[in-house]
Image 1: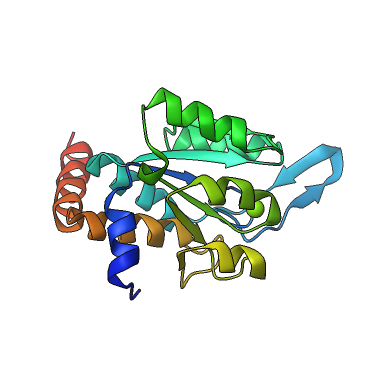
Image 2: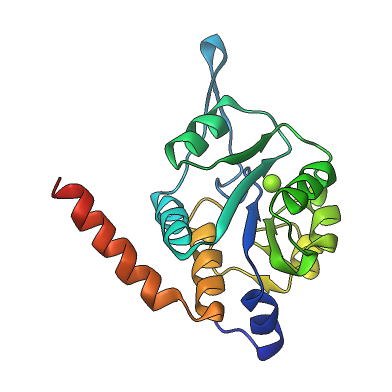
Length: 185
Ligand SMILES: [Mg+2]
């Protein structure tokens, strides 16, 4: 996880991290079973990343091109307020979030893996991609995660942003304290 000064400056400004779902929060696989059952595998590491972002005041949103009930269920579990599910054109959702939180493009990071992510990545001040992203997407990113999609790539992006902002250590402390307090009733 080595980044240069220029990338660090971009990440320092980020207040909202928008994540694609298929291929970023998952490995891109969709398990289809009889009776229209659809399953996806999410990483608990990313769940911890969302929790860490939350205590640090970094907003997280999910923006998926392909509609899937599993995405809504996972987002609900992680208490993600902003979920766009089934938006092939991602620009309107990006603009809506930007307006809702009164942000500049420079304050928005976007992590993706596929071609449909490129238009929003071009707008975002800090476009990121996962290691196993499509090559043009990796080229459009200011940082490519060491992790593949579905294996903690979002967590890595959150860590990176919080470290650039200089709030990582404090966030870890606060999250640990919160977990202890919650579990002790
Ligand atoms: Mg994708």
